[in-house]
Amino acid sequence: MGGQQSAAKDAAGQGPGGDATSSSHGKGRVANNQVQLAVSPLGGVPGATAYHSSVIVNGDEYFFSDAGISFGSGLLSHKNPQNPDSKPEVFDMGMSPYTGTQMKAALERFFHSGTYDLLRKNCNSFSDCALFYLLHKRIDKKYRAMEKLGASAMGIVQAASGGQYQPNPKADGFDVEKVCEEIDPDKVWKTPGQATGGATVTSAEAMRAARLARLGGPAGGGYAAEGQPAAAASQPQPNTAS
Image 1 (cartoon, rainbow, N blue to C red):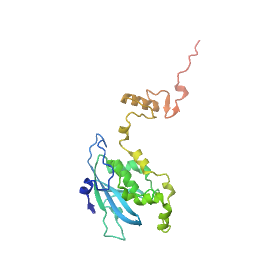
Image 2: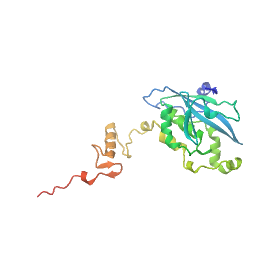
Image 3: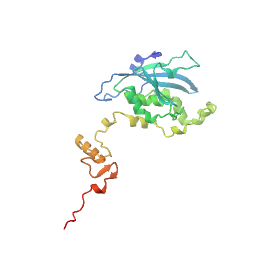
Image 4: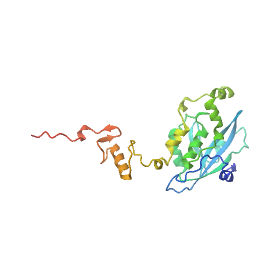
């Protein structure tokens, strides 16, 4: 695959991953998908090195650019014409119960084409979210040092780039933490008593009834759609017979 394999380094707790995988992650699923992180240094400014990263699942590379989420083989996103002999460092991150296809489908709505921003929404933002979805791990903070600097001193970064960096308005409001919270495949296990619409229930039967009520099912309670009263014709009519 190219690049240095660093499984031992990661196992020793010195690799690029953050929090360890939750023991309940993907509960009931077999973790048989190999996940790796590929990282290449790009340069940077004093005090912050810029990196390009991508996530590899079962040999297929996934990365984010202005074209959106792309995937392929051979770590093509790390090819640098200006330094053709450079190779990315590849870290073994663990085994996931989720495939690359499932991860891509979960993240696509947050990483549309045209929304890339060099500092606020870049390849490392995607890798961070992808690792969280697959393993409940986070990318090492050092790989996002440039983004952190940009968030606190964007004017300095713009000046250092000679004006080449301009914020992308389509990336406004993007928040990695919010995305991770939204895509967490285990969030249903974290709040098992929370039914659709915010009603607290105490059993699977009660949760089903609450959801049917929101959808106008047999336990509907007079609601044909979320937040909308059922048609008047479906309501009992008064008996006017004399």
